[in-house]
Figure (cartoon, rainbow, N blue to C red):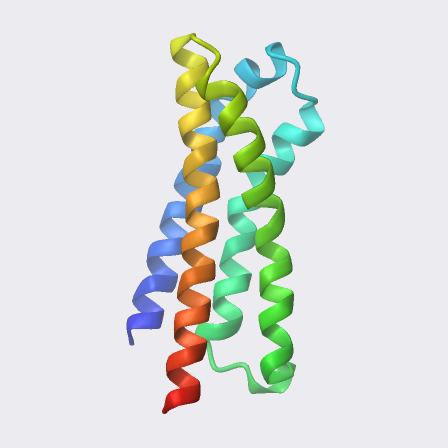
Length: 128
């Protein structure tokens, strides 16, 4: 039950971060980030949803434990790109750059939180 509540929370937060990145698109492009990479950072929180859904929802026909590495692969772009660009923009000195850096930092930390939840959920399910 807690997993479904967490899934709903992650879905809401992922869409909120996706929308927030729309506001920072021009700032990032004007500061030298390629538009394709901006879209990759923007879409990356939406990839957290299937990574978490693979564990929370009872999808036994997809292969059980094979979903865990696949889920982790979906988390990698958001964490790496979020870390890279959050450092760059949080030190930019402009208010809009700092706000964009915070949004990308939130994307990174949401991905790390999903990893912690997946690992915790896996450990508890193996113990039970």
